[in-house]
Length: 442
Image 1 (cartoon, rainbow, N blue to C red):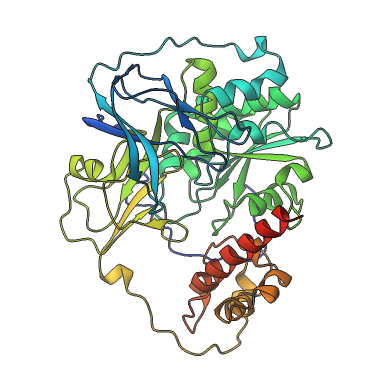
Image 2: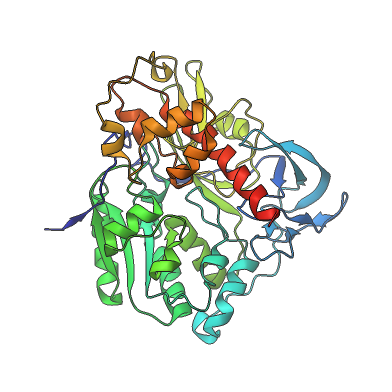
């Protein structure tokens, strides 16, 4: 019997994973035109290293930056650079993007597999950076930065995050079922980088088939498979670290401060493919799910493919969607247009109908404390929400609004249906702007 690990707080929404969890990953043919925003990660934007009219090969680097906290971008098809111009991206902004007209030849760049054990451990992060690997669970933090902690931070544990706690999402689940060896190889490469053996693959209990496969394959590797209680946001970095190691990451600190690196399942496979095949990050697995869709499944999608193309190739809609979200329903980003590209952090396209998107009417707070009880960061959402509404940024900062995950647990549990996370998100953005200005003026 597996011991189920967890953390304090959190909620238990219906996981709605039955729609696609048994649907094998399908390869989606790329479209005529692909769009590559020059920022698909946390950190400095990339600068194009190609020009309009250039011919590019599949896997060729097309944009990069000299900044440490950044990650290059690679063409996912071969073809001709059609334009370099501002295009819409999933967060609603216009970003300088490289537009490539696909020649449908998939002429590859020269890829050279690498035996990771023949590489000096300190050189591993540079190779991962060159592959453009970022956190593919949605945060898009450049992975090589995680693997290059400050000299005074001793890493002794690496955790693969296979929780996938957001409702509807099943892309990580399918990856663990269909390419478990790549997940394990990615973990072994990271363990080698730090010269350690303490590796974990953490999976929620609602994926028993993935748990069984990983247990079978990891036993001989000395890798621990940790079974997590099904609870949201179990896949949050700090919550996962506590569940697996019982270490608490202090507010304002990073996992490296407690000796841990956490990497998403698909990120681990991207690392593995860099060494196994020599290929950079060019694709990601996307769950396409929701009541209005003709078909619900998981796709292997080339980065740069537009959402409207995916929906069209998927058979379109059987009823008019009321809302389309990139990601899950708790932390995903609603879309106001569908000609936006799949980027490195896109885990799902979730389509909901009118009934599923009805927003309950707010009523006065009854001071029941449920938002405090369920907050995974031990904050006081009801007060932070009121401070934000009153534009009291001093109190917002004092009571830790920047520690909020924006996970939505407070709004989910609130019996008065207060729009807590929406107010907190706005207050958090204002406080962070104040903090940045303060730091610049020092």
